[in-house]
Length: 70
Image 1 (tube, helix red, strand yellow):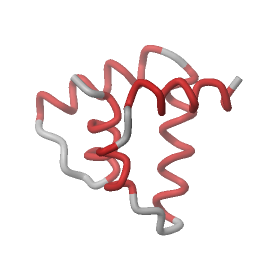
Image 2 (image 1 turned 120 degrees about the horizontal axis):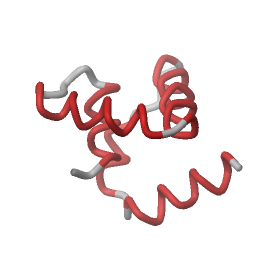
Image 3 (image 1 turned 180 degrees about the horizontal axis):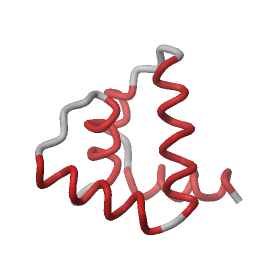
């Protein structure tokens, strides 16, 4: 399951029950995942539109996020 799409759906309060399980598993995998999600959540509260993320090259974008979090 594409984690970027799950993150966007989570931030939009639009996860199915199955997606919520996948998201929770991903969130619990590492501190980096948790930290990244909560940073995105803060940005969302500041008005950033995450729907644009859906069309990104998710692997490239994820690698970029990981590099910045190191």
